[in-house]
Image 1 (tube, rainbow, N blue to C red):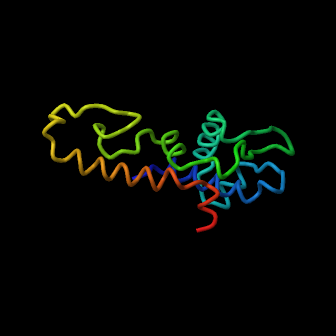
Image 2 (cartoon, rainbow, N blue to C red; image 1 turned 120 degrees about the vertical axis):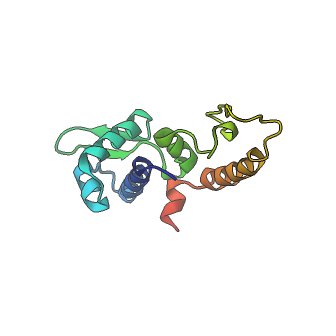
Length: 137
């Protein structure tokens, strides 16, 4: 299950994508109101997205947030890892955050192969899904 933080990040990016061609920045207050996201929580998320260089921000009357990357360059796998960390359901099958299970022998484990398949299918779907492609669903 993805966190609310990740879900809100996706919603905010989708909202910002709608205004990308208008060449204007959007205030966090507008995003929070339109997408029903708690303002303080959203500001933290937007700062993180800026730190990951997904967004850029400006202060002042014409300030706000805008995309720093094209929506077709923002994959859900990358975004989910930024916001939540591992995507895999078990640490022993994670590609980027691998950790062995202390109670398990991976060579004889009958659970791991199933969750590797789940990981592979999940990564395939999320890796082929961008913010842009989500707009057209």
